[in-house]
Image (cartoon, rainbow, N blue to C red; front, side, top):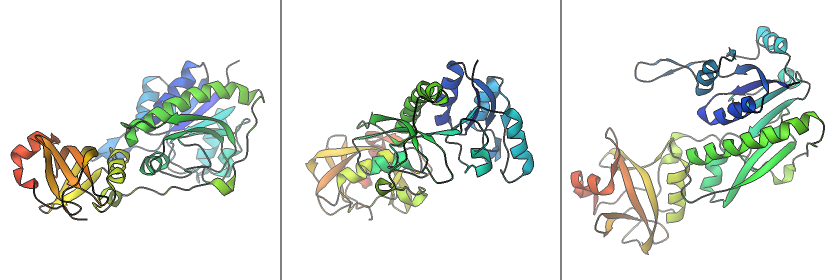
Length: 313
């Protein structure tokens, strides 16, 4: 007999987990996602990617604005799930929800817990220059990512990884790990291992201000910033009173020329910016505020005075 599951998730990165559960034959009794939000220039309400996918698959969707309302808990209890699976739902579950399913609530978390608990595990791992991160299947408790570990899998970090690309890959790996682990968890074949609080690290919520580039930093750190904060908030600097996004960059082989923030040509069609450790950051793609993204050659054709300027730190 198939296990009955309630799935909770919101962004597109959670879709591989929902798809894997369905592909493995689990009976999805309901999909919980955050309420529709205003989006676009018209500020009309837009459904989350998880809601859109659930409706396409004919799954019942629930969007309680709060878990404090008794009817929200009663509606969930009426579904009688064997287990609740959570992937980037974006809401804290109260104890009444955690205690409801027979086999508890399992969370797909994109880090190797207890490292990188909290709201920005992928971005923080990239900013820290980790060579590898991973995904954890965790039995949820009332803390912030403090529950015991059911399963883990290591995932290497590639040089080309952005925050979005690595998050997507981690949830794809997490989806596979979940459907491998869930039957064994329900049969009692897997032991949930408590996390070591002494090894825990906590991440914080990323803000737009985190994207501002400080050219006094080493080139490698700035390169990680460009990758980690793609697509939001993006890495940016200021030039001629406007926001200038750095969309693609790498650590150049040669030294920087001048003080940190000095812009110069590395060669024909190659743009460098001096950094705090004397190494140049090569910039390949830029976007000036209010304009479309451009490769360096095209950007300099329209804005040749960028070369020779000094960007603020």
